[in-house]
Length: 382
Ligand code: GAL
Image 1 (cartoon, rainbow, N blue to C red):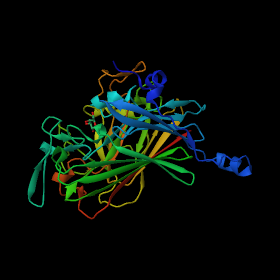
Image 2 (tube, protein in one colour):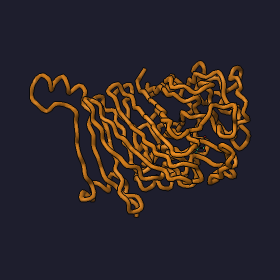
Image 3 (cartoon, rainbow, N blue to C red):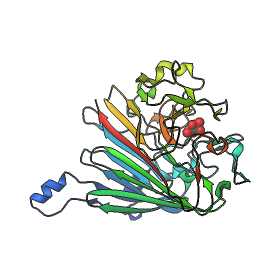
Image 4 (spheres, helix red, strand yellow):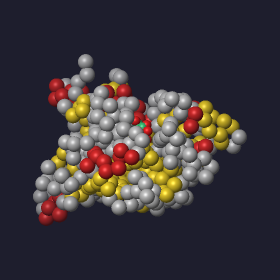
């Protein structure tokens, strides 16, 4: 029998180890009043997936914004932010228990790796050697293969530096896992700030040349799932996107968005033109044509009813805009059915199928290089 996550801890306190931590000085003096402004609280719970232990860290800031992070899967399992009336509600699709994330074929809240998105036919070549990856999307490789990073047990630690509190997760992917070359040492550090920003910082290194494309695959719904995302207003700061074939592999063209339903340079309701896009939006936008480490404001999503908005910043060349087209209502969490378009993903990434598309920014990582990828979600109301 599956226990809902929270119930499990209420009913089985022996399983739970809860640590309440705050950065503030506990001395009753003026300094405390000052530092109370910078309090980040941390709650840690233990849970089990397939008989193995995992931790769930919940960070909360002074505005009541909170995020829950599972070391199983490197997942974001809850993200609660205030609306314009100060109501703090969860705005990501999630499951009730962590154990359910072991059967997460929609990639809810997932850290995706080694390669987010598709690699055509699961094949690519590096330095004259052809590699065959696991195929799990018809003939293609998708989101890391059969057991992607979203189903791994990550090592985890809490890092406190001054007033900042971070949760660092690490995973070492063995040489040959899912067909990829090289032992890959990966870390993902999460930080919640007092200005309602969630920072994700990926780092990796390899002992053989390989390809890599790590991202976060959360489904956002700023109405707190009171309606689907077609009424959300979207803005994406990209002049071009990568058209794809019917199996969602890019054609290698960088096409202008001008005059198409893909043009979100000015804000548009997502539902206004979604009917003109076969299957719904599931496309990579071109933010940069070359790799560099500049953090760019890629997109802004706004939900007028709640007033909530989210700004996305990241340093990758592309971002996948996906409108939950494959959600089919099978999943119901706390009475909310996850039907088509119930959530939207904005996945900062290198372009899909880059290892087979020499004109795209490269996804290659060599020994001695440090891979770094930063994603920042900033929340506010207007
Ligand atoms: C998205 C991808 C979609 C679909 C989805 C998972 O990132 O663009 O095509 O595979 O993940 O259901």
